[in-house]
Image (cartoon, rainbow, N blue to C red; front, side):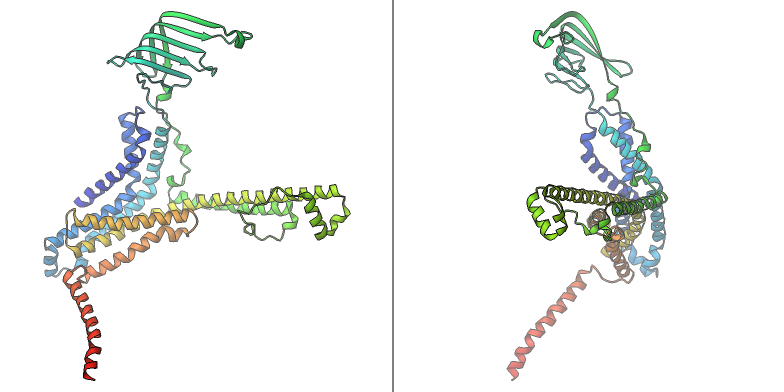
Length: 488
């Protein structure tokens, strides 16, 4: 349990650092409170458990049996008549309990953690940068207001050479306020910022008079002190209603996923049946089409057509056009082309809609299988780590960490490849999601068999004898013809 807890939190911490590296730009400079960042880190860590848990089981089991083998404790146990299979029995029960716990976590806890995490991350991304005015730089963070401060004192409150441009009327720089000195202060509730300006001017272009664009009337007001208040409520973190995110497939349990998959599939099939009926009713000449796939999606029709040439061609091919005048022929051909283009665009639009609906259903199916896949992966990684530790007989954080990372990287790469192939529709969902499990399952069975049968899998001397015997046989085959030639 010690190595398991240690490696679990280490793996979780490493994955959390990767998350911070990717989303650091969304959090820096927004004045977020400590408890908000703490919530985000906690919910993010909860969503990373499916990655950290299998790695922790693999590494801890490998370290445990590696330490037993390194200190010859496995030799003593076997000398006492206890087989490795019997020694692993309590840990197999523990691994089963961890697998069941992993399934319960992914089915009941993970959807809630995804909901809390993604909704909070969305609100943080929508949050504006904190109110911070720098010297000599125009600050445009407030809606319709631009502020420039020439210099600030060390107290970060007293400001000099202040310029405030009011764009709230969306008429340009028609209202400008300047001041020699000012004082910035926050209200006790931090909802507003107060600018107390001294010895300044307010310039206003009058635009409510007739012909103001020609006469350009202008007003100047001098003041000794002026107080301006700006609302900072838009800089506060506003939480979005979490009900808006609850229908996402990553925030559903197995029962909810089953219901959603069934509902989405029914809607998709009904939509297809209704469209086929309407399509045939509007286009009776296309009633023989059995499937929409007979019309290529990427096929294009040239819009620029010589009507006269088409009329001559169609007149020869379809004599029925001989009964119409030339201008009527143009009209018939033009209407036919318009109907064909409209029908084709309608078909392509509907096919794209069906592909989108199918992709949504596929995403639900992927999440459904991943909930079962996590618990199975935890069990298989135990049967890889424990026998491998007994074979290599090395504990600590050296060789076991390297081997564990190699196995986990293989599992992760295959898993991500299968998931992407399933989302694009290239592979079947069941095969794509369970491909990583199919790859590592034979490894676990092979290592378990070799460890319980005391096979010298990683014994250098045994492998040297094997390859030495192979080289000796090869040398005999090359020498034997020479000796026969000499005898003859």
